[in-house]
Structure formats: structure tokens, C-alpha cells
Image (cartoon, rainbow, N blue to C red; front, side, top):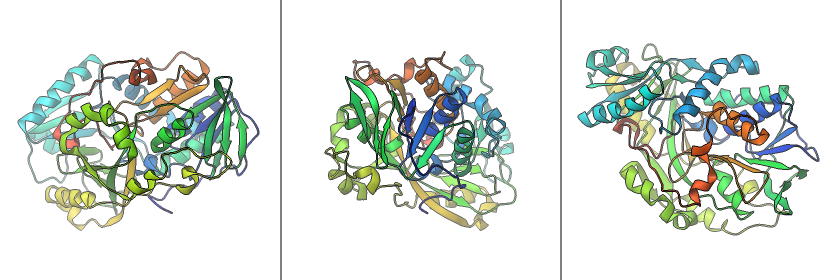
Length: 455
């Protein structure tokens, strides 16, 4: 199977004729939304074209963090961390979640300044994030032989296993009554009288008054089919995992040249946060103006290239009739070719952590991150299309806030009091003239804020 190996999940092979809610997409957002809707007694069906978590939800770094987030995301990240705390008990499964802390390492005075700037937001939200000096930073990096200027640490931040978490959440949702169907592409959303009336899948039609689009990198194309303009592009990041390593930090951390995260199996997930590739596609030109502020802010953190997707998407611009297969069935799992950045990151990390010099890379993979112009997700209704809820564009932040985002999406669907204020995530900010706000970079350690691939 392409990508990292996932825990197996038994799902349904057939679709029901109707449901209260259909969720499109079986990543961490879709699975979490299904869980919280099923807990409320909602008749919910989740359709996934490939396998659960087959794309970015299993290919990220596995960080569960509040530290360093855009201030608009901090309340949702905090709520999500609280949900993670009880999630294994709630679903009766193992997500690999552990509170082990995250460290951003200061290599330059500029890093120190940007960390102090973000700590103002931490204090305003009552977080335990704090600045550490050179000695304490070294103490937080067992086995390290290099002394840095210092860093910023959040002891309450955590880690989890992307390859375990979504299957476990999905099993919990199924146990609570959700129907999950894999290998079932949604070809398009049906409307009637100006509102959502269902979806057409490769297995047939499902009537529903509400559809949640949680399709990650595919959300833009699906929404385009019903005339909804979602400014969203894709960015590739490469990751590797090592075999078990004795010693080393228990949590996660990052410098300008490497990021690490201890795994449940004793190995490490390693990546380079500032090496991201955007394959030039037709939407690159469609959304050129939307993404200009982000492009200026992120500098060299995202490189523009022609890739295999550049040619493939050239032939996927137009809409396809719903009675025949289209792009969603041609591409069951996006499995982009990795680059050499993760191996370079491992080499850089091994210069600091000698125990990593003997670490054997077990697998290298890449994933495509769904990004918005301000790197903040859309978790929102769409005013012009009653019954449509969009939960996408997590810009590499989705795994860590997945449970909170799923809860908020379920709140929006059911009209319940939201777990946090949804206003920062409204879809309308892209079409109502709201000025685009790009969060300031937190440090060079993990690249400018607009693009993240950790959690």
C-alpha cells in the first residue's frame, strides 16, 4: 500500500440510500466529525475514495501542539488538546497520544525575538509555554552534543501516531453508529432548490440534507463542481521514520535544518520543515492573487516546480458528468514522490544527536498539504448553499487540532453551542473583502507560519 502502513479498519462495503449527514473524506477531520455526530445520535455516513487516512492525515509529523500556532487557532488547539487527553478512553482504542512536550530551538537572536513575540499570545491564553536558556534547552535534548542559544518550550504539548489515530477514531465512530464506506468516491454534490440534497458516489446516490466536505487536498475540486470558489492549493512535504533508537528526547523539537518526534515504537519521525514544494497547476494561476500575501511572507520556505501533478491537473480543470468516473476515482490515494529533504534532515540531526548516526530509515514518504491563503482552515457553512459545511484547508495543522476541529464541525452541523468561536474560520472571509492576515513567523526552526507540516 502507498504511504505509511496504517492500522486496519473494517468498514462497510455498501452505502445506505439516505442519511442525515454525509461526510466526504476519511482523514482526521472527517473521522473526528463522524465520531462527534454519531455520539449525538445523528445518522451519519462517511465516504472515502481510498482508505482511511491514506493521504496527509497519516503522512504528517504527528505533533499535537498549541505552541507556535496562529493566534486565531490557539483556542481551537487548546480545546483539541483537552479532547486528545480523553480520546483513547472515549473511542476504546490506541492513538499513540502522549503528553511529552515540544521544543522550538533558538539558533539565532532572530529566533529568540520571534519566540518572545509569540509568548505574548501564550500568556494571554494561559499556556505553559516559556522561554528557556541554553542550559535548559540542552537538558531538554538528551543525547545532544550541541549547545544552542536556548529555545521555547511547551511542556503540555504532545505527540500521537498518525498511522494509528485515524483508524482508531473511525472505529470509535462506527461503534457509536456511524457508517463508514471506503473505496467509495463521491463524484459530486447534488443540489435541489438552491440547497444541498445529497451526493452521488461511485456506488450510487445518498440523499442527505447536509454534506460536510472534509476532503483535504481534494476539497477545492469537489466544491468547484457546484460553483463554490475555495482558494486552496497543495504543498508537498517529505518525512521519514527510523527504527528504534536508544536514548534521545521523549517529545518533539525543531531547528532550522531538522525536526524530530519520538515515536511509540521507539524510533523517530524526522523531517525538514522549511523544504516544501508546490507543484505548479492551473489553480496556481487561478488563485495567484489570493496567495500573493502568503507567498511574500513565506519566502523560500515553499519552492515552485513542475511536477507530475502539474500535467495531471491540466486535464482535470473541467467538470465531469456524475454518471461516469472522474479524478476522484483515478487518484484513490495521492502518493507523491519524496525528495531528499528528510534524509538531509536526518543527517543534520545526527550531527547533534550521535545516537541517530546508527538509525536506519525504515521508510520515506511525502504528502500533499491542503493550504489556504492565510494558512487558517475553513470550518464553516456556505451562505449561498444551505446544507453545505466545509471543513478543510488545515495547511498542515490539521492532525493536532483534528478532534477539536471535528467537534466544531459537528457543532456547526447540529446548531449546538460551538466548542470555540467559529468566526475566524468562516468561509466568507475569502469573498467578502476581509483583509488577508498572515501570522508572523514564529522562528526559522519550522519555517514561516503560512506553511506547516507537523500537525
